[in-house]
Length: 112
Image (cartoon, rainbow, N blue to C red):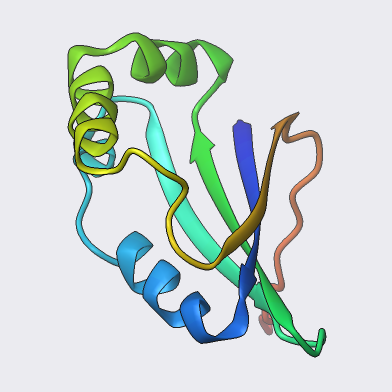
């Protein structure tokens, strides 16, 4: 799997709005190769929250197809036209890209 992790440092009063933005249906959900998206929030800092959005694709090739797709390009073009500046409350954004090399899950014991 291939994981895109966007870490967004945001003023506390805006973090709920950011999370609700990512909680809405997206065209990526129906894109071939998309696996899932998850959001994490770290609220331990006094003046800001850190929101991490992880998006999972089957592999790097699926992610590249998504990035180059007409749907993705149109989505960002529309977003760019609506916003000429950084969204309110955002302090910093960082993107990292990972190959998932280990995944473990809890499994209940079965009696056989």
